[in-house]
Length: 234
Image (tube, rainbow, N blue to C red; front, side, top):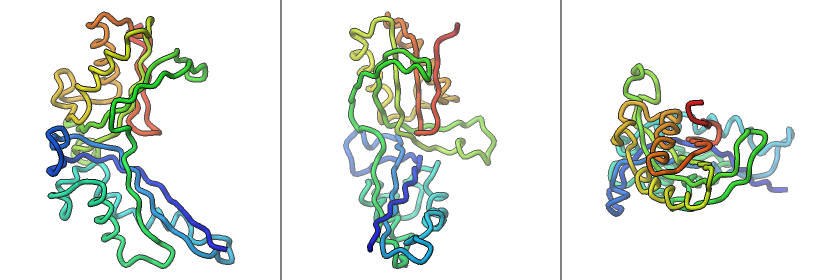
């Protein structure tokens, strides 16, 4: 019997792509999905390798990448594209143990304006809404020096927006995507020192109201495990 294993980690990092177009050369960020690929025959315990060992093998690399700007890392300054990042990670893992077969890297966001209608969610208490993703960098400069979020980093953000009248909302969200995508959020007026999920929710709510939209909920998700729901001032 041969088993194939995948251990998934998310890395939240900023970068500029000096080899890309004008948009890609701007400071922005992503949630990178890093998959360690393993395989082989299970041992007497029933494992090819302990998943905890796979995670530990990646720990030092994770600390170099997560909540940092890739261009500041030796070996990545000139090329931060996904293939280059994959090769860099594989080089850090060398020499690879027999069970480790390689690395697969992808970006968690859609990398385009893909608007999707979501049904009401009674568990979260949210109405019908639209969602899309965007890629951006940020930092929280007011935090103490040892806090990871003080460093410039990035996320593949997910926005969900509800409104009393969903008709026509997609056009407004497309305009919002053009503001946020491939940006450094701290450069946007109102988010300079606190581009947190909470502040982004409030900013989007007020931005929609200024365009004549009556929001019912704004949700900002920066990772699959970090999500803020905002229902206005009431």
